[in-house]
Length: 414
Ligand SMILES: C[S@@+](CC[C@H](N)C(=O)[O-])C[C@H]1O[C@@H](n2cnc3c(N)ncnc32)[C@H](O)[C@@H]1O
Image (cartoon, rainbow, N blue to C red):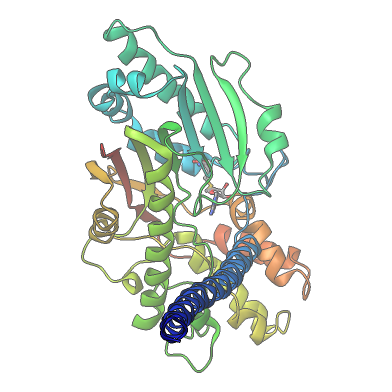
């Protein structure tokens, strides 16, 4: 009896333990289950979020390709190949006496050699358009780098040059006209320089001339009649209300930030970057300087056509040039904000007068942009006829002085 009572007592304890054990087991596993359920739903949410972000990124890329336009391709009378003297002259003036010493004094070739398994020296020209300008500058860079290697008695490496521009650039023409006696390998890289174009730490030298003033897109408020930045009867920020210039400068800052973020990844530590950037005088507001003399004649041509009923007012009001020229202080701040580059040189180009672009030069640079915006409403030819008469008649703005910057940056060591 006593045994039975003891045994019942024991069994009671036994059951209590089993009960406790089972409830702890269930509790722990329910916890795990609920937390795993939680992390699973988290996973799906973040995957959805990532997909949405990817979609937004694709949308941004589509917008970019919609709004920016390449130079006129081919080698016809209105092509960029035949009408890029202004850029060539400007690049000559600004780089002569600067490019070679800059490379010679600042290129760390011992480090570059040791940090890379391959010995090829990789150069990218971003916004290269078509030749001949890109070929001339690439040759100058290759020669300067080779000189530095020879001087240091290190074997001159093989060169690999990446010609990069928007997808719609005339790469066929570029490749068909490559210099025959070049001593470098070549590849074409299509895409916007506002995003990544190359693998991490794969470039030794980046060059970009007269391309970074093109914005990835226009600020929306320029076309919004309710916004103080609505750019009425104007196609750019010169002489426009303060808010217009401000909207342009905010978009420029966003774009340049994206440009530097991509290059900071792509350049090897110690790698150099030379940028030729059209700018505006220091201590001036955007409204106080026109980005280029071509724009005033273009603006007044378009305005005449609205008055003649050839173009609708709406079409004119919704047209703005996606181009912005920073001041030197503005540019310096943007580079410093990125924090991955040492500014070795940020210099003003020597004074250089720029004559008003001919109608062919205007067509070479702006033709595709104007055609895209106005082409569905009006024949584009009367526009260029009028522009041509205006510029030859001389009733246009005085020839201006070009302001541009020579920028030499070095990718900081990590
Ligand atoms: C005025 S051309 C300069 C061409 C050449 N660098 C030179 O000095 O003659 C400007 C070039 O920048 C390119 N460009 C503009 N925005 C770009 C972007 N986001 N990504 C790549 N190229 C771009 C244009 O397609 C055009 O070929």
